[in-house]
Image (tube, rainbow, N blue to C red; front, side, top):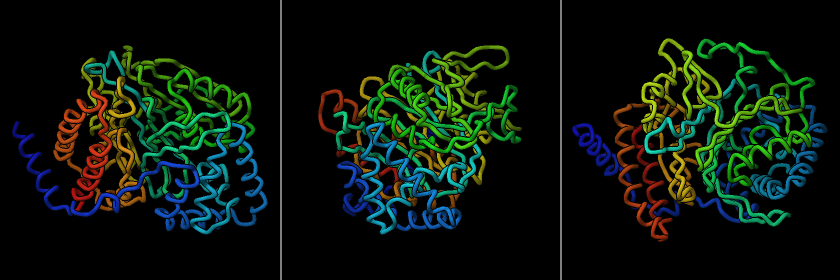
Length: 460
């Protein structure tokens, strides 16, 4: 009780110190509309960081313009083949708004990660899902921590309203990635499907905090560069799949048709849906090399159903699995999204821990009541908000939250517990509206902005 009182007082002080008199329209952006409209908005908000990343990319890829333009043409062709020509419309609108070359920007955004186009060498990420029977009250939880080379990060809600050539409209989704392009590292969509793409443990360098991989190392031979990297495959799935069965069909199809690329490393994916089903699936670009439905954690000779990790990490502080095992059958999202699990020091590496999110998927109202705890960078305070919002605070979209928390590096589990109390209070108050079918979009948007401003204030 003392903790709740003190935490509430802290939040009251923080809220009181913020200037909420400003019109929300000046602080948020609704990334909803045609691909051209959404692209223009993105270009206006992130113009400076787009130019910086784009120019750095071109400087490192000097004397490769012909190859980049060929790669852009291939990316345009493949986007059409998978009924996503609106991706190109969005990218063209961004390029026009920022006043850069369309083809070269397309080559940049499809090829900037990993070793696909000379710029990026990845390190690896960690994803996991925790579902019944491991959780309390049937909670369905998904988490991803992203570790890469430093890059300004953005989180946002997006819904493209263009219909595909096949007549299907893309789903609304929350995605996270760099501010300079439109792929996603991890997502949850309005259907309650969450997913992430990682470098499999067998492709990751063995570092002091990663449990050594004991199996074969199936490198991608020859390296494959023609196709979609693993920041656009998740975006396709976010916009076009509603459950893990559909995901499995898509990935098999993409591999068989040669649409997937990753340079010399393959990709390990993890997905969870609103039914509590989990899919772990990996490819080496040329074929699916591993596939597990509802995988279980095995540790100490025991099997724990409902806990699935892509990569096991451990250091002198122990491992994130320890707290989950200790609380098996009563695991909550607050435990998962804490220094005992998702913020465990074995999971993130300070220089590279770009971002993370913990999703609590609501099985009855995934489009409204799924909660997203987004953390930029991965060791900072988490910002909880719900899928029922449609307006993303610009500070989350343009890298302000990321840069502020990265520079401040202030974190207290005690204070974050106070933020969690605010989330509980809000979700309990808004749930009856949703269940009655009332429009609560304004409530969701106001709460989202309030939480972003609160976390910014907590870092001052």
